[in-house]
Length: 58
Image (cartoon, rainbow, N blue to C red; front, top):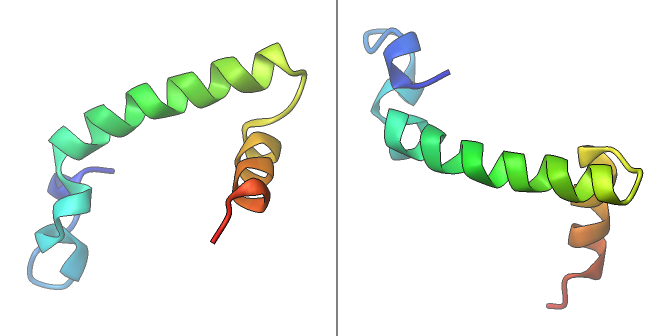
């Protein structure tokens, strides 16, 4: 849900940049990539995300 879906009077997310439509559109491309990788490996997007986080180095 982009910032337009948040009531600026009661929800602080309405003013946060990560909830703008532009960011949502960029993230959508990332999510599509994640779905494709998951399908190629017979895994869920959650499993791919978790594997990536576990393999990150400090």
